[in-house]
Amino acid sequence: MRTSRNLGRKHAASEHGAPVNRALRAFLGFFAAPRVNIRRDYQKIRRRQRKLAAPLGSPSRATDYTVASSHGDHLIPIRVFHPKEQLRDEVLLFFHGGGWVTGGVESYTPTCSRMADLTGCTVVSVEYRLAPEHPFPAGLSDCYDVARTVMDQPHLVGTDNADNIVLVGDSSGGNLAAAVSLLRRERGERAATRQILLYPVTYWNHRSLTSPFESVREHGEDYRLTNVEVQDYMALYVPNPAQRRDPLVAPLMAKDFTDQPSTLVLSAELDLLRDEGEAYGRALQQAGNMVRIHRVEEALHGFIALPWMARSVRDAYEQMNDFLGEERKGEQRDREEKP
Image (cartoon, rainbow, N blue to C red; front, side, top):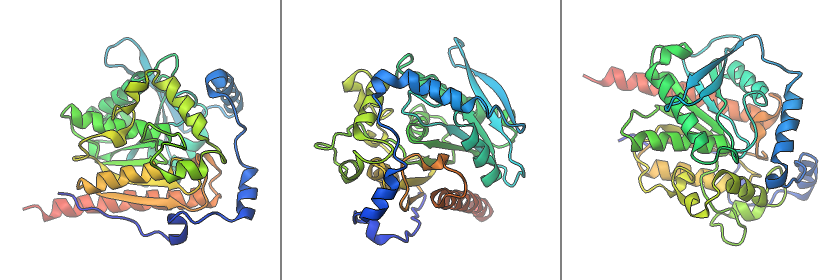
């Protein structure tokens, strides 16, 4: 059985829900995303994202490819980012956020390019199909198909060992990474060795009156992401309310958390998804998986897209690089100890 590990946290007071001081709240209010009606305006959001991303283009160290879907009825675009300096053999298979409805390879190009440079890893970004045009399980199926392809044929993304494939996702992308891992176990397939879940969606209920998580009540109406918006995203992704409790939609609803990848969960202190992400990490941990949970202080939902000099981004990459380095050392020790 794999042993569990937690990173120590330096912010014991905030861990227990101590209120953020008023001055900080006022300052962070300047960074709150404008409130939108997701169900009505998702296409406008996509157009805005494309407009902002257009001048950036694809960096010189990125290449576009496609992966065939399992049914052969469509191709799944991917973009492969190479770091300025290749420091690791790992390939980070990245599923973007955006509530399963917005976001994409183009809008996440700055984030993925920076991720490649700050980890020294190749990063593969997946352009999965979006809801509501393609509701659940379309996006998950695309992520699963790409994961299956690169794990079966790791040489396609520049590595000779499937153990080097690390699943990574932020927000709804973290949800998809966790669901891919559960789905591979469900189908009797080899699990990825590691996954990094950035402020993931892991539960189905984000109503302040009925959610079991205090962070939904603490931060469901203030910064970046609101509980109403999460509910709207979920409604577009999974139109059938009864289906939202499916573990492949809400991984925390799974009955079996065994045989999952070694996991790093990074939560954001001021994020309504904070508690459910950490709860998922504890559920994996209690099932015997190796897990690290780290809460990024004073961080908002979506912080990984901020410039690298932001404190939350520096903290996150310090944790990610430590996790990647330590897990590789642990795997090497295990091999050396085997007779």
